[in-house]
Structure formats: structure tokens, C-alpha cells
Length: 482
Image (cartoon, rainbow, N blue to C red):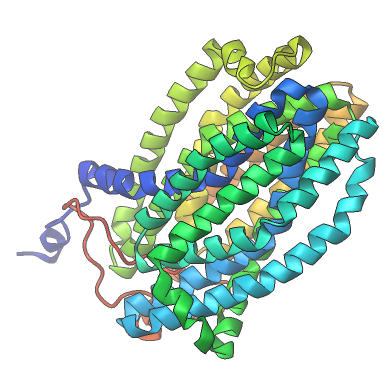
């Protein structure tokens, strides 16, 4: 058989790749919904207390999340080193690496808690309304007690996914979100705790999330007494660029929130409602992107780069089908959806307008999420970091201020600025994929690693990667680039 025929013996097939993407995506999507869904539930329960309460919970949740982002990115270093150990066949090291990641989480928890306590008083001047400022600070202070719980659970979740287990973290996240609902009912309504009661319900839900994960991975917890400082440094060294990118990206959006907060609590309440609905609608796209990144990384390791365009196209097709259905839902039922969050007529009217903007960039976000994830899976991390951070800071805060304040479009102008950011970044990602100039160096990790030809010898990817086409088995060894 000719060489050309040999290459076509097992061509990439869209059906099996679609099944593999779906099998990888749904547990990741449910896990990723955890934090956003908790804040959405908080918003639902405090909505009856008015625009001040909605604004405080919305911006308070965003502030708390922003302060956590660097530590969350840092802990992704644990996923990287565990995936490397799995690929190298060093399964005996996973327990020690997991303990080291938990050590990083403990250190990061202390630093993040101190930072949160230090900056929270600054939030007292964000809104024009004194009551909203008071509720915002109280909410962030209460949520601060959940920082160690959240980051320890994040460490266990990242390492589990690095080992190939995405379902254990999924069940823990689902359990936590289910109990968050009765906790909110008890603390917000039963005990009349208001905004602060909602924060404490969130903290207790995070405690349960950690408890479930700790029980599932109790052998990792027991290994904490033998933490290796060298491994802690290794995890931090790999994770800090990811943490910096995540922090800078989310900070740009948080700054937009501060800009919009100066417009008043009605505008901020509408922004918060649209934000929660947007998060819930786009997180499945981000999860699909993570799956595309996994399969793209495996294709690089298996020397099957000719299959990468098929993976990306299938991912885009699935994403566009989902986003199209979601856009139709948001365009046809904006008021009933918004009514779930508030009974304030002004907030409902403005929120419904924002949902049309959200529906408009759903399709564009598919290209943003899938193409960026594919580039990360191929090891093109420098480019994606520059575009993600650059587009966020060039577009969102300055254009949000221009459209929202100077031109008088209010919160709608701020969301138009966000849509421009997504459009610009998506275009750059698409051009990068189409040019394929990065393929020669696929697998580079921020310039620290050798080119693809030497990846296997450095134990950065498995020496033998199961072929995910044309069969339906999902690879269990996550590539380090994800």
C-alpha cells in the first residue's frame, strides 16, 4: 500500500469526534456552572429586596470572583503536572503531586483572604446609594470566609481532571448547588438575613462541595503531611502565567462593572441579571472549548495534526447549534426570563434590552471560545494570552466608559463594548488558526519547552495516546496544555 494510502487508513470522522466532544463536555460544563449558578441563586433570592440588593450581590460576587482568579489559575499548574505524570506512567507520584497542589491552595487561600479583607473597605464608594455600598461590603466580607473552602475544592477538582476524572468533581458541584437553594431559603427568607444571609448560604454550599471532594480523594488529603516544597514551587511556576492571564482578563470585566455601577442601582441591577443569564448560557460553550483543547492536544501528541481542522469544525458546529437555540430563546422570551430575578418594572425593561445584546454575541462567542481553546490545546499559549488580555483591556473598559457615560448609552453601551471585545479577539483567533503558522511549534509552553519533535522525551505528553478516531472512546489522559 502506498504511503499516501496509509495516511488515509483511519481518516478523522466527524461522528466519533462529535461523540467524544459531547462525552468530555457535559461533566465539565456541569462543574463549570458551579460558581456562576451559586451567584445566580443568590440573585434570585435577594431580588425581592430591590435593586440595591441585586446590585450588591451582583457586584459583590464579581469582586469576590476577581480576587480569586489568580489563585484559580495558579492551581491549574496542578492539573499540568499531574497530566505529565499520567503521561509518563508515573502514577505513584500523583498522590504526592495532589498534596503539593493542596499546599499551594492553602498558601494562596491565606494571601487571597488577606487581600480581600484589605480591599473590601474600598468598595464603600462604588455606588451613589449608601445602602447599596453597605450591602456590597457586608456580602464580600461574608463570602471571604469561603475562600479556603473554594480554593481547596478547586485544587482537588483540577488534579482530578488532570488524572482523567471529570465526573467526581461534577457530582460534588451538583450536590453543592442543590443544597445552596434550601440554604438560601433558610438564611435569606427564613432567618431574614438578606444579602448577608445569601453569602453565608454560599459559604456553606462551598463547604459541602469541599467535603464531597475530600471524601472522594481522602488519600490525597492524608498525604498533606508529606508535602514536597520543590513540587509546590514547580506547580506555582507552571501556574502563575495562567493565573496572571485569568486575573487580567477578569479584571477588565470587573472594571466595566465598577464603571456601570456609577450609573445607578437600576442600571447595575439590570447588568447583574444579564450577567447571570449570560454566564449560564455561555459556560457550555466554554466547556465545549475545553474538550476541543483536550482532543487537539491529543492530536498533536499522536502526530495526527491533519485531524485538528476536523476537531475544530465539529466543535464549532456543535457550538453554533447550541448558541443558535439559546439566542432564539433569549430573543423570544426575554421578559419571562428576567421576571424570574426581579419584579421591578424598570429593571425588567432594561434587562430585557440587555438580553438582546447577549443573544447577539452568542454566535460570536462560539468562535471566541472554540478557536481560543484549540490554540491552547496546540500549545500556542503566548498568542492566546496576548490576545485575550489585550482585547479585554483595549476594548471593554475604555469603550464601556465611552459608550456608557460619554455618549449616554448607559449599561447597554457597556455591553456593546463587551461584544466588540469578543468580535475582535475571535477574528484574531480565526486568522491564527487559518494561517497555521503555529503548527511547526505546536506544543510549546510559553517558550519554556522544546519543539514538538522532543515533546515525548520530556514526558509532557503520553508516549502512546489512544486514537480517538474513528472509535468513540474518550482519552483519559489530559494534555498539559489544557
